[in-house]
Length: 67
Image (tube, rainbow, N blue to C red; front, side, top):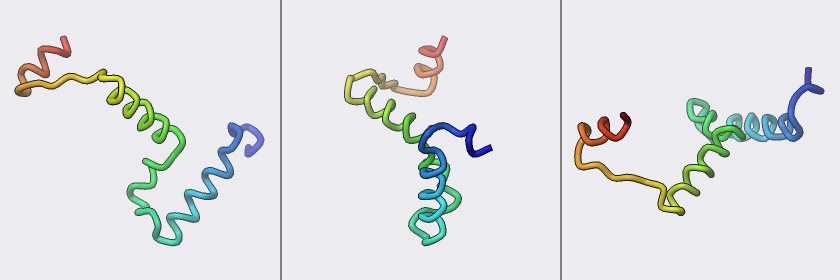
């Protein structure tokens, strides 16, 4: 089973578990430190840096923009 994991997955999981065990990371928030969520966060920050954002005056305007 370990052989089927992507490169670096075992090391990343091991580091995450160690950080949770030493109370460096709240176990309820450990998901944000997974490789997948770190990638999402990097992508989001890149969008912010590139100005790919929008601001809405209220919830109604926001919902209209989704249509």
